[in-house]
Image 1: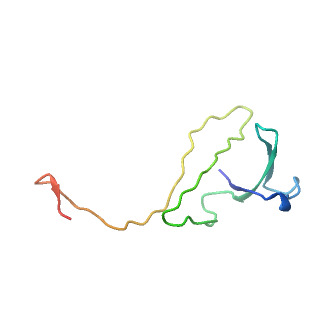
Image 2: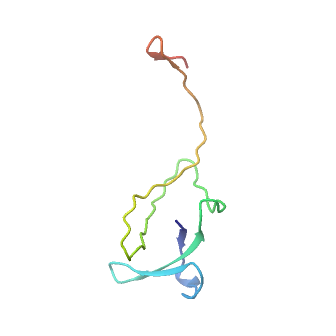
Image 3: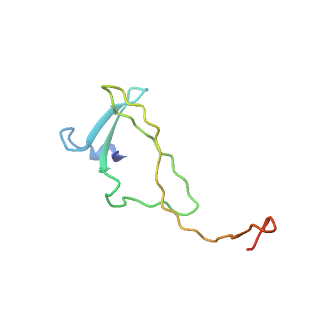
Length: 94
């Protein structure tokens, strides 16, 4: 699975460039995407600020035969606290 980012209109790359695709949206407009990674081993391309949110779009470009595959993401997280369950008393120890 490749990761891609939308390009701005001013920086439209040539379609013949490796990793560049252009899609026609339902409203008829064209949107160009440039691949930013190819495998899960590629370097991290971005981070998300704490407390913020993002909206992601998944594009399944498989056509022949159509491939239906559930999409999922892998996240790296850091814990800020931990709770150890107290299994003997049905509570937790802190």
